Amino acid sequence: MATTAIQAMTAQALAKIILSYEKLFILDVRNTAEFDNWKIEGGATETLNIPYFDLLDGVDEALGQIPDGRDILVVCAKEGSSVFVAEQLAEAGRTDVHYLKGGMKAWSEHLEPVKVGDLKDGGELYQFVRIGKGCLSYMVLSDGEAAAIDTLRMVEVFERFAKDKGATIKHTLDTHLHADHISGGRQLAENAGATYWLPPKDATEVVFEYEPLEEGKEITVGRSRIRIQPIYSPGHTIGSTSFIVDDQYLLSGDILFVESIGRPDLAGKAEDWVADLRTTLYETYRGLAEELTVLPAHFGKATELGEGGKVAARLGDLFKSNPGLNIRSDEEFRAAVTKNLPPQPNAYQEIRRTNMGRLTPDEEEQREMEMGPNRCAVHDK
Image 1 (cartoon, rainbow, N blue to C red):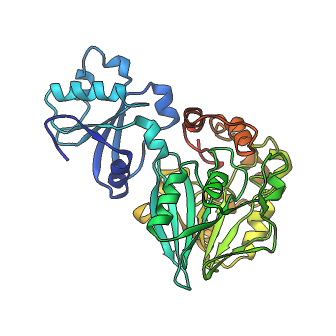
Image 2: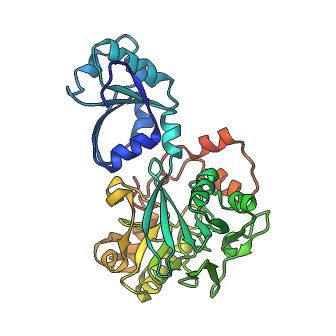
Image 3: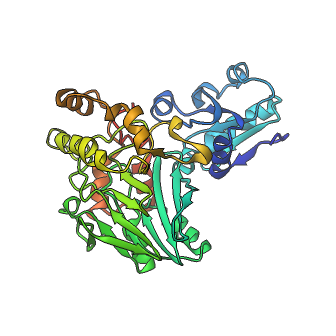
């Protein structure tokens, strides 16, 4: 990867480096507040933050802190500042300098497809890891048909993936009305002539038509079945719904994560929804098979990324290791999920209204609304 001139590194190439644990030194030249709020993490990366304006008169401060013999990636919000700093580093004699093409905006939007596993009747299940923001989407493929779950707004990624797999998208589903990112489920369904499903209790303010995702319904994808289970799993939102795929996988939405649990406050109903959240986690999920593989809609920490970037865990193991599933009393649980929570996601009210169809921001406005971490779990501080 070393070169005598600076080179652009794409978000896709960066994701590969992180997921394969290659060593990389990141110089982030955004201001300190932006860096502290949201940064590139994971793999074998090492990161240094020096604001761009502190490097305008020279990069000696950075050179003194960057180890020799390491590939360097300079990062900023959009790209311009990182190109300037990377050029200064190259002029100072470093021959291993890259800049992140498109900056943190591009990093926020990259999706990395990861195969979760095979289905019993010959189908496949894939997870799409939005590594820069911590969002997770899914696609079930079977016998030339596909269903996309918790689709992100970059719908062309899902369309291209399904086409490459020789599959027609028949269904798109959202586990709940999202507050941290703009859903692409409705747009993907419209483009593909598919059915868009949404829990009706989360859809009381939407201004578009949808198929109600209600208890007891089964959605067929080729020869595989997506069985809605549990029938109803509120707590993160009043309509949150979990899916069991092929009796092997539990798609838990934002109710249960690998290292934490969902927060109940993003619709301003924390005190009302605490009891629902505890019931879902401690009763409904307790009644499910421990062998199910939990596949959440988000991750909050790089430590939740497993082999190849997959985010998954056995349900029985989570009941032993996940702190959110081991709180003894109702009072302790209420305090844990309503007090000392991390900041709410960027522009979350506007994102909710967009997902209701009540706001129609343009593409650049959507990018700005989504910048930053997802913050859907109680531990994402």
